[in-house]
Length: 187
Image (cartoon, rainbow, N blue to C red; front, side):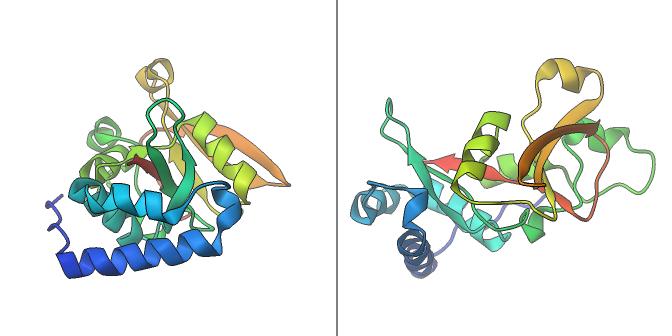
């Protein structure tokens, strides 16, 4: 996968405007947090801005979903209603991609997230995100999979159906048009 170019200062400005507008429009996602403090952190970190830009460009609609009480980092996660369109039809990781004999997808969720400088959500993070709003009501998203499950060839994904968040398993080499992945970045 080719390395994405770093956004220019002008693109960062547009990204910051987009993030601010989303932050203001969805205050219940981050009660008690102020945009000026978030922006100050973002403005001094071009690496994280690049990650957020890639999340945005692939349809993730990143927004602040919390703050780490220990580190003080702001936590951004994909808040698109459905699994980001630019990150669907991918298997779980490189090992799964290499194991496919035919009909290989273009890449894997783990590789894509890593290239963006982001991390797949954990099952717990996915559950926390679902407490904010209803996500993945018609799609599903790969999540970080424990090594024991992955070693046996499986991977985990989640979605929301029947007003309930489900955690499922599938072969790590599987991929579907309605399955992508959500990720997070800490700033």
